[in-house]
Image (cartoon, rainbow, N blue to C red):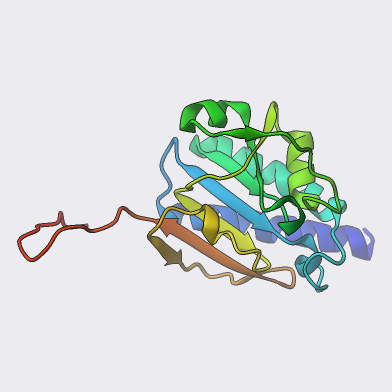
Length: 187
């Protein structure tokens, strides 16, 4: 096995571990929406947006789709800033969450490698402008916060990097509202 193939297999193994640890730590539920932001450039140790790798994205997307299918969750793949961080989702998610489609197809230089790979691998991909996800995975500090529900809670697992990219995980919870007389369920 060559050095490149070994590196890709190592990334795949790390990724599968991250997914399972995140799903368990975040207590993801069937029907939830999870946003994925990913800089393949950062994974390879390059500056975000400078060395996108379709090859890396093609290694990451299949295990991600398998993981999401097993949990019964919907995925939203965040595009890069050149597409204003539009998201790629399955058409069934558009219908389930009442999302507003937009017309664009991601490319390697406008959207990024991960969203392009997702577009190619999803059954019926659609681009949407915004979502309010229940949880998210941010690989390479791509700034997914704009697509999370208002109260985001960090999720910590035993891994902090995928390749050379920093990994940030989050889940969300409903807001606490009320005043001094309000009562809240124990969690």
